[in-house]
Image 1 (tube, rainbow, N blue to C red):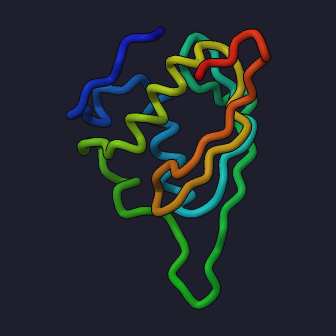
Image 2 (cartoon, helix red, strand yellow):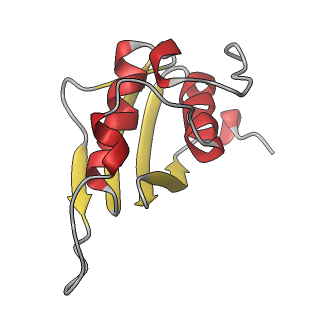
Image 3 (cartoon, helix red, strand yellow):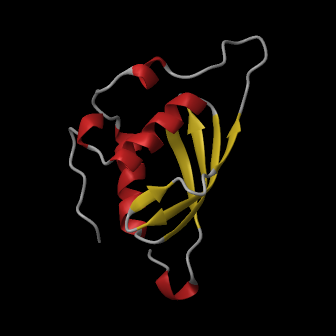
Length: 117
């Protein structure tokens, strides 16, 4: 298991790829990230994941205000997602549902021999 993330955690303390994942969540605001590869406990962006944005008709659509900030304290759902990525080590996250720029649910495929629970 990778090193645990203990709050409070700032964006500036993250690796470049972890910060990029946070920025992607904020830029989507509502939607889904699919097929995010993970290597060595870090998200991989080459090739990039599939991004599906959900647009609300009659509402303002666009990135979160925080996307332009260099640094801020991370909310618990983001810390939980980053810990999940670190714990996965090597694999793929099938889908991350994003609501209000935060991860809401995460789907991970596990082999029968590596099932935890």
